[in-house]
Image 1 (cartoon, helix red, strand yellow):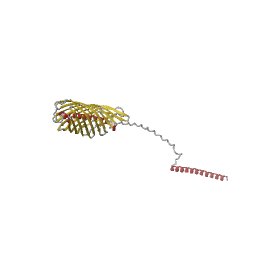
Image 2 (image 1 turned 90 degrees about the vertical axis):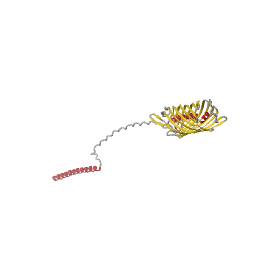
Image 3 (image 1 turned 45 degrees about the vertical axis):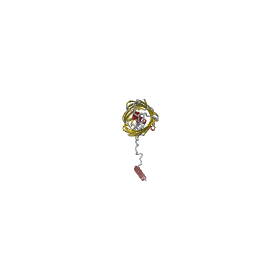
Image 4 (image 1 turned 135 degrees about the vertical axis):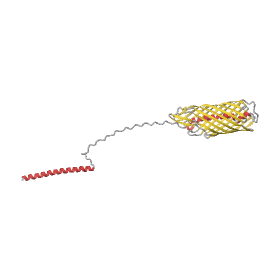
Length: 398
C-alpha cells in the first residue's frame, strides 16, 4: 500500500511539474505575442525604448544693423529766381527804351520841322537859329510779362527822369548828351518774390540832315543795382547785386511833306547787351547761390511817322503818330546757374518773341521860338510782353 501511495504522489508531483512548465511556456508565448501585437500597432514599448537624446538649440544668427540711407539734398525750385530773371530783362528793356527816345530826339519829324522851318507856314530857315538846347523829361512805364516755362510772369512799374544838353555844330549837324535815372519795382506775386532796380544811363546822340534824309545814331551805357526779396517758410531771403547795359542804335529817315502834313519812313538797327552779376542770398530757408548772366538782342525796326501841325497865334501845335514792325532776328537769352548746397539747376533767360510792333503818338506845343512842351505815349507789343510808357517833357533853346 505504502508503495502504491508513494507512486501516486510521485505521479502527482510529475504532473504538477509538467503543468508548471506548460504554464510558463504558455505565459512566455502570450507575452511574446502581445509584444509583437504592440509593435504592429505602433505602441511604444517603454521597457525597450532608449532614453531620447536632447536636440541642441541652434545659436541665433545676429541681425545686421541697417545702414541709414542719407536724405537727398534739396534742389533749387525752378521758379526760385523769377525776380532775378525779370530784373535782368528789365535792364535790357530800359536800355532799348532810352536808345529809342534818344533816336527820336534826333529824328522826330516835329523836331526837324523846327530845325528847318522854325516859324512854320513855309517860313525860311532862320540863319540865326539857336545853337544850344536843353531838355528835361519825366516818364512812367508799366509792363507785364507772360509766363514762360518755369517763369510764372511778372508786372513792372518804372518811374524816371531824363536831363539832356544838345548843340548844333553846323548846318544840319546836331549832337546831344543826356542822363536817365530810373527806379523799377518788379513784382512776381505767384512766386512770392519782388525786386527793386535802380538804373543810371548815360546817352549820346547825333544827327545829320542832308536834304530830305536824316541819319542818326544813339549810344547808351548804364549801370545800376538790384535788391531782391524772396519769401520762404522761415522768413525772407534777400540779395543785392549789380547790373550793366550797353546799346547802340542807328536810324535812317526820309522826310516827305505836303503843306502842313508829313510822312517820314524810318529804318533802324538796334543792338543791346545787359549783364547781371552773381549773388548769394542771405536769410530765410535754403538761401541760393546764383551765377551772373548776360542777355543780348539785335533787331531791325521798320515803319513810318505821320504828322500834321497847326499854327495858332504864332505857336506851332504838332500832332504825330507812328508804327513800326520789329524783328528780333538775334537773341541770346543767356543762362543762369542756381545752386543749393551740392545741387544745382540751369535756367534760361527771358525772351520777348521774335516779331512784334511798336506804336505811339505825340503832341508838341511851341510856347515860343525857344521853348516847347511835349507829351508822348509809346507801346511795345510782343507775344510775351506788353509795355506802355507816358512821357512829359520840356525843351529850351538859346
